[in-house]
Length: 352
Image (tube, rainbow, N blue to C red):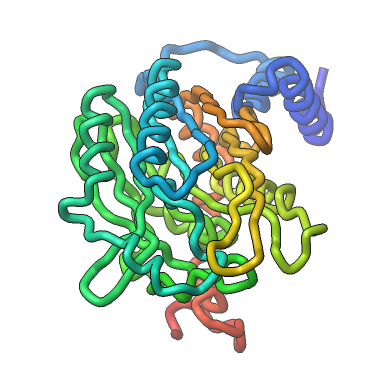
């Protein structure tokens, strides 16, 4: 019996829906769903694969917790949660942004400049390097960096043997009520980075970077198989009724879906008062992990200290990513507007 293209598409769509009902925590593979329906319609053979593709399982984790002004206590808490994640089998463990101290960017005051330290000899980086080597895990470490006369919102990625794989400096620097980062941080000069860790090629950017789709796409174009964003975000001092959490989460779900990679975001919790102004921010936590279609598969609460973990097969993710054709069908020659500030003229990239 013959079957039409529209019927095949309908069957494929139904297969996707059934998959989400029966196994919401697993990333679906549309290519295999369509192939299964094609087999049903036409019959097929089952030869051995031309090139065997062994699974590449990886467990990703996010932590979240409240911090005070005691740097050592904050770092010790980070270590405690990293150990909890490792005990659950996590391979790559994300700690929140600037976890050594409270979020000082609520206000502009020169005393906070002294929190910045150089990469070389940084005690928290040294501690996390030893911890990563002991546990055999990868740890992105966010910190306030002093470099000559400049300061950056930075991170290093520590590999599973304790090796420092390199530095990323936050590219996009916000400036608004309660989030006055331009007073403290120079714009990053490293470009977007991908780190070749023991477990995967890892793209990590920082907080405000997560609102920019160009950042996520640039990392995946460089080979990132997983995206991570350490974060500090919560209430808005100028408007206590504003809750940006759903928007914040959906934005990163979109990056995950558009690039077909798992994504991890780690945020802090608790209310932090400014030291010199009568303001405060309540950080809304909600750390989460998506699968490679943007679906949230692990979600932390808004108020509790937590560790969340999810496992993915990076081979299956790669097959799905290739099968969708997103990166095959890109047209960089048509994206000239993206490298202008005003988008004027719709120039092609080669003309700029």
